[in-house]
Length: 148
Image (cartoon, rainbow, N blue to C red; front, side, top):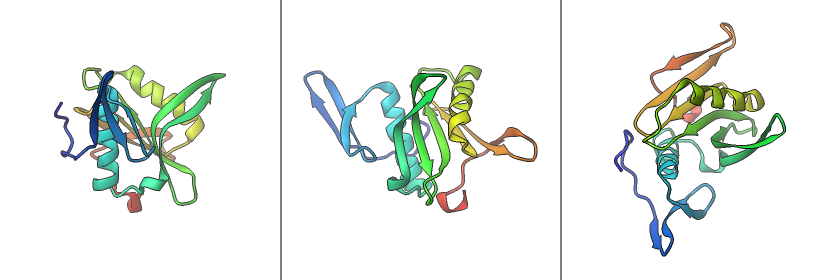
């Protein structure tokens, strides 16, 4: 499916149970679901367009929130290892609603990242937390890694 992102080359293979796509961050093939398609394309966008170092990115990073195990889709760290940017990916058929933003905001209670992204591959929302205003401000795009 065509997304609202540049076109990237992916390693995809067909197995009996379905298609698999290579995740360059996890260095393994994973099931190619509609959400995974968005995640892998957004990962390539971060790596190739926004120059995010692959070794500073975590995919499906484990979190514990109120005693429940959760996973953040994509988290980019700074060179000191602190989380810098969190991305919540949804399948392109999933509408971006307030509850999706709230999910990422809850994760950010643990991560404390200044930049948040919500995407379904077609629509992207970029936010930066303003310390002075104590609220999220919407951005046109996220800066390249060295400008974060």
